[in-house]
Amino acid sequence: MTYSRKILTAGIVGAALPLGAGAAQADELSLSLATGGTGGVYFPLGGAMAEAWTQGVDGLTVTAESTGASVVNARLIEDGESDLAMIQNDIVNYAVNAAEMFDGDDPMERNLGMAMLYPELIQIVTLADSGIESVEDLAGTNVAVGAPGSGTEANARQIMEVHGISYDDISEQFLPFGEAVDALRDGRIDAAFLTAGIPTGSVVDLGSTEDISIVPIEAENAEAIADAYPFYSPITIEGGTYSGIDEDVDTVTVLAMLTASADLEADAVEQMLTVLFDEGTLETLCDTHARGCDITLDTATEAMPIDLHPGAEAFYDAHQ
Image (cartoon, rainbow, N blue to C red; front, side):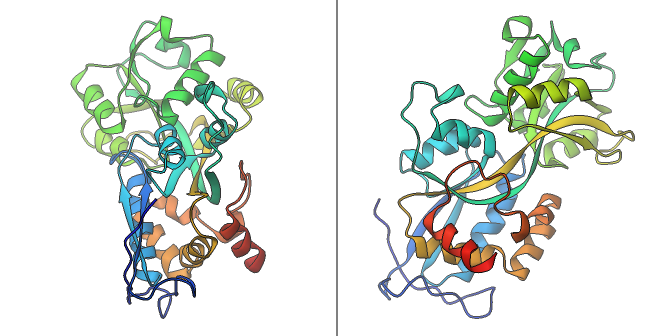
């Protein structure tokens, strides 16, 4: 992949960090960060990360791009169309191992680990008067299962499977966050699967105009999901997270993470992690979205599902 280069001077970590002794002083490394839909968490947090890296590393410009999220992002990295990606830990593991939705593909080994970020909760959203109170109640209804090729779609399929439901039992609609919320509001669908950090902006917006409900995944079924698909774990959405939902709701979660292309030089990745875990950057991410507050150096390699990028290895060896 070919990049244009020039030197930047702004920094958020004191003086901006140099992009390696070998970088031409008149050049700039321009990278793309694949995020997700504008109604989720990837997009705003990714934008804040991109700005921090652009300001904090001399010779680097990072642009956050809205995409179809996890499954699409793994392919963008593999195809050389993106350099960095926000992605679910389960999905990138499937990509690297040519499993699940990547069955039949070559292993996507250009995806390398950079950092674990925050929990991404599976939220099954419906209107309070829909009569849908359990996953089993989805049978016979119109359900948004996520954008085509998204991590949400994989999660929806797997969770329904454990509950004895398949696409044969519902009218599935392949809609991203924003479109699913509009369809719920307009009565065109009965429920929507969303996989995102909470509070999810699109759900907050829906709750501001409609009475909403989150369909629970009961503890017994949450354990069965985790047994069948080890990247899930039980979690609770605390009451008060969304307007009108005062009681806790049990569900399951995967984890969001950052990946980097194997084509990136180790020095660039190491410098970006130095900026990412700077105190000022972490404060900015926390201010951008509540899930940004979950990003810490202490948990950056916990449950890492794929090999680390050499630049990430160097960073963590020096800081942990």
